[in-house]
Length: 218
Image (cartoon, rainbow, N blue to C red; front, side):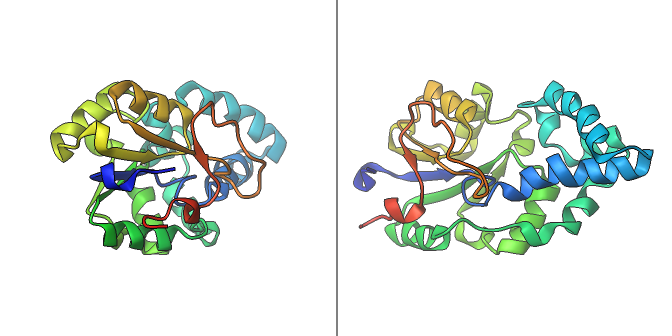
């Protein structure tokens, strides 16, 4: 599936790609509404109804990914709430095997995420994955999310990568489309970002179920 001899860079998303998206889905759809309901003296269901449109208004924008924005917006300590359910942070199967194999192959390995620095630090602390990467780039370093073509243009000034010799694995279709528009040649979606949910529509992109399927040298 992957022409490894043609690649010089491997870009990997974090949430839903390397990590099980169940943590994030549970956090935003259940845990935050629960704490919001407790604060306002309303039902969990009423909190979900109230928060849904507020989520939708910023979906795909920088504020959606910003811990500080949501702490101000909801008057909740979002990082502390994440820590309350941090035991749910989990690495997808065979991710470590894949990272080790890519390292051995000599490709430049870069984590490219929309996650806010506070979320990123929590997840790296829990998973111990950071040491596998040559670089870790948050969209908050650049100022625009990966869904924006400008992200890839700005990333180019930092990484100086060859789009034709780069692989991106990401569970977000808008991100994959943005990367495709920029010219990144090798793109893979993720079939099951959240292991508690059914396979997702990968929008015509080639997709993987398990990183074992694309191990270099296999």
